[in-house]
Amino acid sequence: MVATLLVLMTLLASLHTSAAAVERVAWTGGFSSVVVPNVEPALDDSTSVRFNVSRALNDSSTYGAELRMFDGDTYLGKCNTGMTCSLTADPSPGTSKTYHAEVWVLRAGAWVKFATSESVTVSDPGWTGRFTSAVVQSGNEEFLGAVAATFSWSQPLQYVYVDIVDSSGTVLANCSTPGLLECSVGKALGPGEAEPVHAEVRMTTQGGGVVTVARSETVDLTGMDPDAYANFLLSAPEARLVALLGPSRATQALTIRSVAQSESFCVQVGQAFPGNQLFKSSVPDSALICMGGTAALLTWMIVELGPDGALTGLAGINPDGPDDSNETPQPQPDGPNPPDTPPAAPADTCQVPPGQDPDVFYFYQRNAQAESILDAGVRDVGPQGKIWLASVLYLTAAQAQFELSLPDPPPDGYFEVPRSRLGDLYGPYCVDPDFGQPGGGIEYWTTSEIDMSGLAFHPFQ
Image (tube, rainbow, N blue to C red; front, top):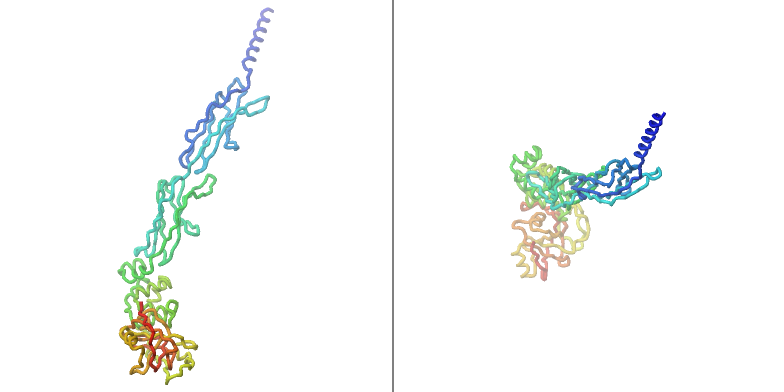
């Protein structure tokens, strides 16, 4: 009996001791430190944020605690063991994030916030470079108008890339290799064409979007100058023409350079391209420019028609000129017309529409004759019985000689003669070819001497 009582007492004592061993208290403690190895990590790199507490979160003598981590108000995760809880901080380039942590404990069976850490901010400096230059390499003969632009910057590429774009936003070139300090783009442009381009440093965000972090100045890609292109077509070795233009266009270029510049050739050019926009005369611009040489003509046609149009058009001109064996001279008057007689019908006037005579006429002369006229104050009729005048002011001696069929040497300038100083007047009429010139201008004449007193002689510039 005594033995049984002793066993029972021993058992009770053991139970009391066990109950005392598992009795727990509320968690107490706090934050001891917040550690960030690098608050400004390299571009798009990451760092860690470590929150340390003074007591193990899972201390067995307590009811335990949780450490909850936040980015601003955004919950990131928790720890409930040990004395350290960490997160990875990786803000997007050029942005910052601020982190803090909270310790939550059990009180009366519910979780309550017990302590809050200090806040720490982690910043990604982003790409901090800048564009330093934008250089254009002009087109040359080797590339026939292919032109390039090179953009340079100060910080090597890392986690960013460079796009070169045109004015519409189309990406022409992309450079993304880490470490690059420049990017180039090339484009083939016709003579006189231009394309504005610029470069942008861009990056893809963590959400998949694209942002531009730097922008260069805009430069123009410009094709080969039309003059340089024309000279190339007329002077480059045949082998280079074939290699760079192809057989067909090279043949056209060789055909053009083989044609001797002649009056008949320029007349044909004028007939094939009859526009009159520059000189406003009866002779087409193309024919007048042709008289200045093949290079000037080819340059003008490249600007007007493009390289292929110029080659095709000029290569198709017959260098021997038109067959003029059946041409009939323009009708000429039978006798003087009174000063107030209406102009002749259009058929007789080089297709000049009927209308009133001009108020001013132009009398083209060489210097020696002009001096004689200025000394005498009058222009005599002379043995031919006529004095020819024009109704159009020509800009150059060559143009006047060309349209009025004047002999060599060409005139040095002109007098402006008022209509009131003319007696009888014949015209207007079309100038026939003569003295190796094609004519085609408009002429009048008078059979009376002209009072030239007080009139100035205007030399061509």
